[in-house]
Figure 1 (cartoon, rainbow, N blue to C red):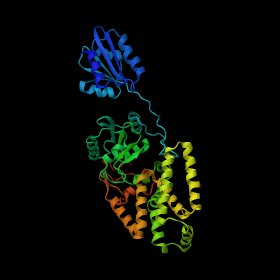
Figure 2: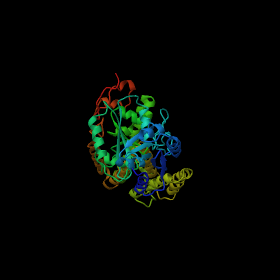
Figure 3: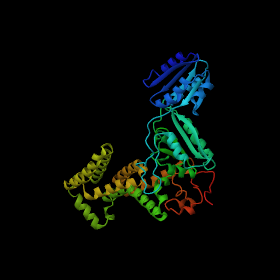
Figure 4: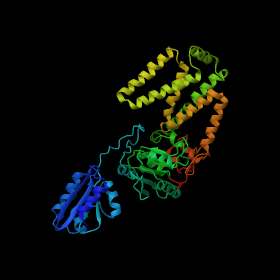
Length: 471
């Protein structure tokens, strides 16, 4: 093998990129070439662990003596077709003039944050670790929770350009083999330029990709993912993303919180009812209010009706335009608070909530009852933070139905929504299980939360191999 020509060939294939580093060395009449990317490899480890041991060794004649000089376990011999991909993954490629093969040394290194508590999933008690953007760290966080040979990791790669590593994790003998195979086949069939985050896979893995409803579970906490895998779900870890996906997914998962399993079961049940009430208020509250105000005001108590009449007497907008204006104002404040620095975000919230709201009421642009109804609806959104986007859309839909068709259109929308949601499945799991269809055993961890000693079987809402988990 012509080492210098091979180095030049690699540089051309990598378009002479600024982070391509090459070395050339000659020992005992044998030429040795090194090619790696200094942006994603540990340069100090390369010099001290690879280059110096080879340069001082007097016995380099072939690959075997080269391996002995390096003395590392992370060595592999690859073909000419595989070597470029290994360099791009952060490995050092070594080749000799006396051999046609390529030696690869794993030397990947890049800055990664520590597994801290995720900002979206804080807990009062329980584990505080969170996934990070490094797939190896995320795999180790899952592995540490299973000292069992049943834990299986399968490597996949997606993205014509990014070559993103994806790991499918499941428990053999617990997760259903057909579901695992179905998920693997879907991932393998994905043809896309690049996958930057796990969210890129969400619509591609969903049974109904055009639906606005969430059909793939997600979490930033290893303990939650481990608990779901113990129930028979499959986890999907994507390199570069701190969000791990889980399948199959049912709506009940969004009513549950990791805090529920680290607190008293009676209190956990109470909190789940609070979340369900918050969901109903967020989706239906503003729409029901405007339907009653415009078309069915005789249903309202007389004292409340007088209050509404007094507060809306000087308002220049119709009730529909008024509620749309306030909703739009809330969305603007929310978007602004996300993008401003943290020390300005709090000030903006105070300005928006106190000054704009209070001034708008005093100026006669908006009425106090409408502000209260919309504010309660927007606050209730965050009882289920994962469903925030979907709830916003449904809330706006029911506002339009209530303002145009009254209570009849509002109730028709409710019936249609429940019928639509009831027809969705995620890898054989009914979306509204265990409520529809009603599965008695799964309701032990549904809206009700029973003690752990009574949850002796795995969920029957989706397929799994082993039903019993406690004897």
